[in-house]
Image 1 (cartoon, rainbow, N blue to C red):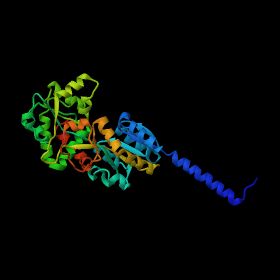
Image 2 (image 1 turned 90 degrees about the horizontal axis):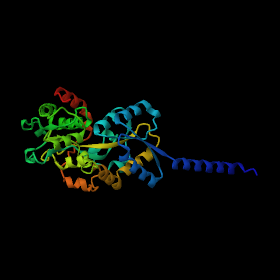
Image 3 (image 1 turned 180 degrees about the vertical axis):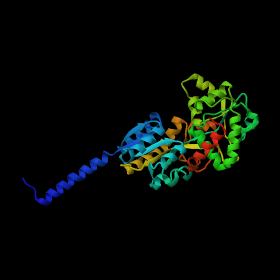
Image 4 (image 1 turned 90 degrees about the vertical axis):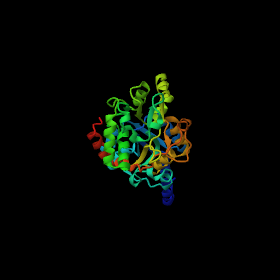
Length: 342
């Protein structure tokens, strides 16, 4: 039976709407992540369970993923790029990888100092970088702040990783903003002269070196210490037992903190769903999961800290705008090189 022309058009419209709805339901987000799969995939799976939006996850080295995004250009399937450290996020922004996050409900969840310039990215979690000291050899009252590490009293007693490490570059960039370049360079020169050994290894290696008596103090990110405390490796747990945290610069700007963060890619095909995922990652449940799983501090201020974080005690965090960690990076690297920090 032939349908009247108008009825045909209505039928075709209904089919088109049904197809559009099916396509909308089938929207799949593509996330490039410099975080290990175990630290992001479970929360993405929960997002899919709650929303029906599938997420394809590609994990890898942050620099390699950034290079991939640049090479892919407008053909990139990525909707979101997640990486660690404000310095790396700044590099991605400078490379034109991101477009501004415009969802006000998302932006207001996180203090503005944890946003990138022009809201090109937003912080998801915080990691503090304090001083660790040997419980049996160091009186913490002899420490005051990061500046203490350049004092002659700590000659041959300081461990810290290489200047190539972005965490140290960002710490130095923050100090440039607080102290100015001249004072920071003097501090770095004093720090280098106090090295107990040439920089080697990662943050856990610096903490282990304190426990082993190679040095008395070290600088490292807190979440590594938390992972050592709960490690399946008995030696790591034993090393963590011998070390404690000192929160520097509490009478001034506070202890240096950095972020893991996420941005909406310039050529995102699924912007609305991508911002929906960002909002989910900032939800109390997801923030609490981050804190419990990787011992990171929530970026959303009213989320309760995990038991591990609470055990370390409250402290004043530096609320310096994260953008300075990226903007001052080049000056920080030059300064570190001049001082012989290798």
